[in-house]
Length: 219
Image (cartoon, one colour):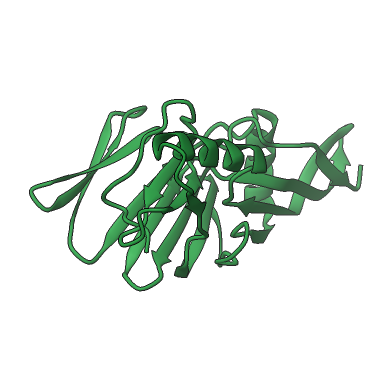
């Protein structure tokens, strides 16, 4: 099982977190610091008023994944083998017991769903937009969604835990007097939660700049 309290820091791979197994010294787990976002799309339906398109409703959809690129996986295996002085090492998949994904595009505009819990931990999300939400999101979309955030909330198999993903922050975890302390350096924010059976993993990144083209119907 993944040992959340003993992360291994590989300076050559700042975007990857590596953890040992609690019982098998040759087994490790590697997770990306940031999730990937795929197929981020906004479709708006509206009409032209005085030559300008005005959205009346819309649909936003996206897919998130939480997995290592194959190139990063190979680098992790190579670096761990070097640390183990040539002894064989194995990267194992994390066993998740449950979880959900929450993506916030604007304050008050969120999408929620369940990740696959295996493979690339994929989650496809979609939400219909009323007129005010469609117009606000259209404006933010034009700026590259600067305030968008996403979170993966996951439970490790065998022991309750939480893996929180908030895009944009660089974070770290340590245990102080039995309390897990999570520091978000980029925003100077620290979260403290009681330790014990609940183990928390926090990942960080940003949706800023991920927005693609907008499809407008009724031009």
